Structure formats: structure tokens, C-alpha cells
Amino acid sequence: MRPATRAEIGRWDELVVANPDGGQVLQTRAWGEFKRSWGWRPTYWIAETDDAEVAVLFLRRRIWGFGDLWYAPKGPGVLDARALVTLLADRRAMRDAFLVKVEPEIREAGADLDALRRAGLRKSVDDVQISRSTIVVDIDGDEDALLASFKPKCRYNIRLAARRGVEVEAVPMTDANIATMYSLMAATRERAGFFLRSPAYFRGYWELQAASDQAQLFFATFQGRVLAGVVATHVGARGWYKDGGSVKEHSELMAPHLLQWEVMRWLRGRGVRSYDLVAVPHSSMLSEDHPLHGLYRFKSGFSETITDFVGTWDLPLRPRAVGAWERWGEPAAQRLNRHLRHDLLY
Image 1: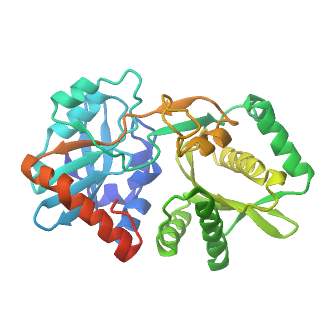
Image 2 (image 1 turned 60 degrees about the horizontal axis):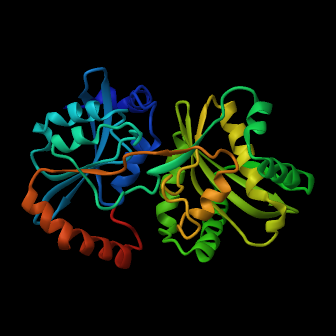
Image 3 (image 1 turned 120 degrees about the vertical axis):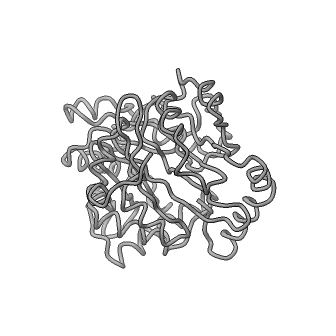
């Protein structure tokens, strides 16, 4: 593994899209540079596997008393355990690291997890991203066929919203629109009870990714009032439902269903062929008491097929330091970030 050249960093996103996984928005240069403002140093690497060169964004953070913590958000962009093991075999660049965290989008079904363990990797206690399990909608092909692939109730809700006057529009990342989008997420947070980072955090990457032509904000409105919003991201032929929110009022209008449908249509027009709805329960945990069950109920209207990835894996390079980090260092860092910055560690 070697540092990317200046020329390679200049066309970084092209290299990311050429990765075996087709590219990941959290491996782009915009995401790396955004995280620079939140305590991480983005570093860009070119790694060799048996089959291909892979462009890898590693975020690095100096932890006093421990060394460097390395983290590849939703990366490296490989598709099987063998390639990941090969990529991580050359550890000379990691000489200052005490822990390396990776979360490639390797499908859990059929993955050779024993090969990861033999290479010194171990499953992280907690996954960093909540998208270990997801629903990916194939939006390529005929539009009528795509609509017909949704559940009947989902199709009915899309048509109901349109018939009753809900309108969906792609809107610019203005100060007013960003404030509105954050308020929609805050309203959803009050109902669902999840942790919501600060407005400054979301503004930072929304604006940077929009400027990089990798993000678009959408609103669904009724009689001039915004009922729901989505920030969709995309790179190459892949798109993601990155952030969303809605108000409780006028829920009978089914605005979120029409909103997602119009987002898919917009992405199709940009050459995107798959739309990742991001977070649902693991396929083995589809009980109504799961905290993500409400999201699954909504998203499964577009497709019931759940993709489970292997999640976050750790490569401990200094076992004693990693043990101390896991026992008290990381919990303390998480608490400090929540209380002092209203933020998460990763």
C-alpha cells in the first residue's frame, strides 16, 4: 500500500468508482475533507489486491497515549475476504497505528470470515455505520417495471400522494433549505429517539458534497408547507438515501412514499442504477421490537430483499493498547464527544 500521488488525489473519485465495489460515497474526497474539520486527518492510499488496484480513504486520528487510530469508512472497496486480507497484508504504512478499523461492503452470505480471523482481524463489538444491513433497490431498466416491482400498498401510497396534491422538488442547498431539512430530522428524532448530530455537522458535508455534485436535497410539499425531506447522495452508478426527515402532520398524505419515488426517478436520470436505502435490521432480527423496524416497514415497500454486510472489523496492531482503548479509552472519548461537541467519535 502506497500513498496516492498528487495526480491520483486530483482524480480521486474516479479511482473510487473504479474500485471493485463500484465506489462508496463515504470513500470520496469530499467525505475525507469534510471529516478533517471533525478531528480526523484524511489520507489517500493505493493498495494492491490479487485482482485490482484499490483506492482507499483512511481517516486517521491521533489518540494521546495510544497512537494513531485508522478508520476506512465503508471501505476498502473490495468484495471478498481474500482481497481484504491481501490489501491489509502490507502494514508498513501503519507503523504508527495501534488499531485499524475497516468495514468493506462484503456480503455476509458466503464470506470467508475464518480467513479474516486468520489474518488477525476480529469482528468489532459495535459497527460504526448503521448500514451493515440495508435494502438496495435496482432502479435500472424500465420505469414502469420498477414501479410495478414495489409492494401494492407502496404503489398505492405513491399515487395517493400525487393525487392529493403533494409535490416533490429538488432544491438548492441554501441556508433556509438546510435549516428546514435539519428541522425535519429533528422532528423525526423526537418521535424515534435517535441521536442527532449538530446542525454544523450536517451543513458541512451537505454543502461540500453538493458542491462536488454528489448530493441533492429534495422536499415534498403540500400547499406550500414542507412535509418531508431527503438528502440523496450518489457516486458513479450508486446512490444512497443519506438523510431524511418528516413532520407528523398530514401523514395521511403519504408524502415520504412519493418523495422516495421521485428521488429514484431523479437518480435514474443521472445514470444511477442502484439506490441504497441504507439502514434496516439484520435479516435475522426482523422483530417488531427492533429499533429499526419502523424503517424496515417503510423501506420494504420498495423491496423486501435485505443485504447483510460483514460490518466493522478491527485489526489490532498493538494488542495491549487496543485492550486499554476498548476498556476505557473509547468509551471516554465517546462521552466527551457527545457532551462537549454534541458529536460522535467516528
